[in-house]
Amino acid sequence: MKVAVVANPLNAQAPPVLRSICDALVARGIEPVLEKESAELIGKPGLERAWEGAEMVISLGGDGTFLNTVHKMGNCDVPVAGVNIGTLGFLTACTAADVEEFAAVIAKRKHAVVMRAVLQVSMTDETGKDHVFMALNEVVLMRGGTGRLISLEARVNGELLNRYRADGLIVATPTGSTAYSLAAGGPLIDEQAGVLVITPICPHSLSDRSLVLGDSSVIELEAIQPHSDSILFTVDGRDVLQLGKSSVVRVERAPSPLKIVRLPHHSFYETLRGKLGWSGG
Image 1 (cartoon, rainbow, N blue to C red):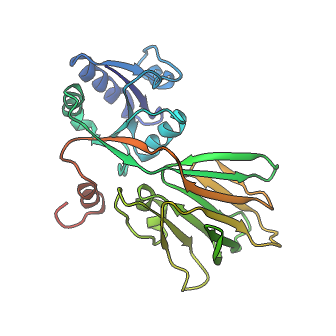
Image 2: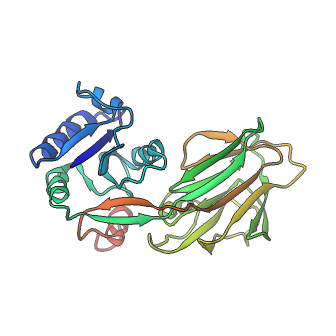
Image 3: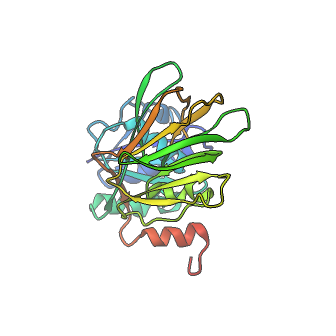
């Protein structure tokens, strides 16, 4: 069994934990394959696309590292497991203290695999270039550097939903409901719920609230013309692009979900209790 490992090179804890993971895997007959930049942290050889040919990918860091790993992998259909040495860890399977247990579970193939919905997002940037992105958490349209509110029209399955005047708009998956959408006042959503959520960011109208939609919905977002202010576009908090003046952002569920690895007996609700400090956590 081959397991690829991708670590956050900017995290000071990464080198020792990376060594521990590799040692734990090798001790159980599993071959670790290190991503090139990660391998340099401990002076080992690595591969640019270490996940190709692997049965699993371990992302060593926090939720940001997990998202970066998923985006690097592209359409690679390999389950991803997160080992948390970051801050939040909503997406991770365990912490560095659980590495030995995690390696033992993998070796016995007792781990669980959870399917998480992914968004497919198309847009045109200010230069006229077309882009297609995949988003695990969310797609965001937000105001640029002027500080003024922006005006956005949202349509669902071709029908007008609303015209928002706000700092921005978020379209999130159930996975993303614990991220930016939550910070903007959106609802928490069960990981297996077949829905998407639209959450306005600081809307001018008090009646503009989050809306939960079925995940078969096709959402289209467009700036209301004339609109002189720049509108920024980002997916999963990564590269920020400026939206083209006549661009329509189309958001829909991607054909294939992401496979996330979890330890047995660990649940979404356990994660919520622990991360949000709920009673019983």
